[in-house]
Length: 296
Ligand SMILES: NC(=O)c1ccc[n+]([C@@H]2O[C@H](COP(=O)([O-])OP(=O)(O)OC[C@H]3O[C@@H](n4cnc5c(N)ncnc54)[C@H](OP(=O)(O)O)[C@@H]3O)[C@@H](O)[C@H]2O)c1
Image 1 (cartoon, rainbow, N blue to C red):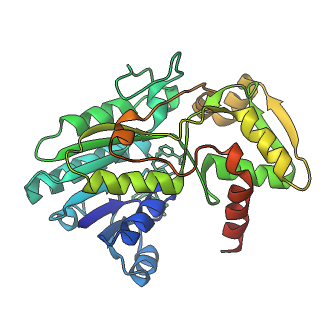
Image 2 (cartoon, rainbow, N blue to C red):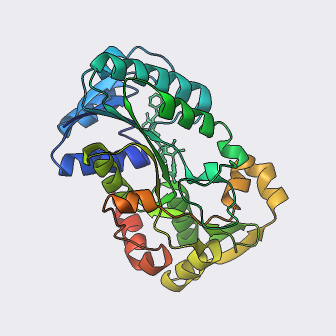
């Protein structure tokens, strides 16, 4: 298949790019500048230079079998995302044939869960993700395309992201935990998430919302304890009161302190089964991946 991908240099987008290429698909990636475009081209990936915040790349996104949106501008968040969606909708509509548009959301739109949440659970978004449900709805209601919304858990694997930062802190000897650490994170291994994206563009009868979680229901302290058992020098652990964390990190702190139990029945129904089923149970492997990534 011919697939247009935003964010191919990102944490999730990079994993999705690798998985699409392993599966033999032809990928065109949207990147911000020429050096990034050259790096992609060296890997046999077509690159289009453009910015989420304007529609200059719209024509280059016409004519694909599927469009996957993983990019997010950390500075211009919701505003740039709305513009990117407008551009992707226009490109998909000009393509004809209702190509799939896969939008990357976040399990944080569910908010803290009082019972295990699935794709039908009413949303109560964390403040950090307050703008997201409206963007999910824009996608789900768009015409001329087949809408797919993915809500990944917190991603782990390699060196990047929230869990990558935790591994770095552990190796450096000090882990800060927001709140009491008994809250559970909904999580997913980067390669398993990427495999789900491949299914979402290739499997028949895919549309609507899909959660992507390993269903491990691990607490932050479970993860921290696994880190302590697997690092040569046991790191210090400091519990940081939520007010102090909020002063430093804003609404991101509340999202990290949230208790979530999230199930992924719709993805499982596609035959998708995560290969890693927890962070703590795979800590030696994840630390090795993290250390190897430092050498690159
Ligand atoms: N990481 C997680 O644990 C996680 C979990 C669930 C959901 N999500 C969601 O998944 C999405 C991707 O997250 P991520 O962790 O992969 O983020 P990331 O590593 O920061 O990647 C963001 C990507 O977007 C690109 N980008 C940023 N601003 C751009 C712009 N103005 N124009 C064009 N491209 C731009 C970046 O390109 P450059 O290389 O140029 O910076 C990069 O490729 C986000 O919506 C995030 O909220 C993430």
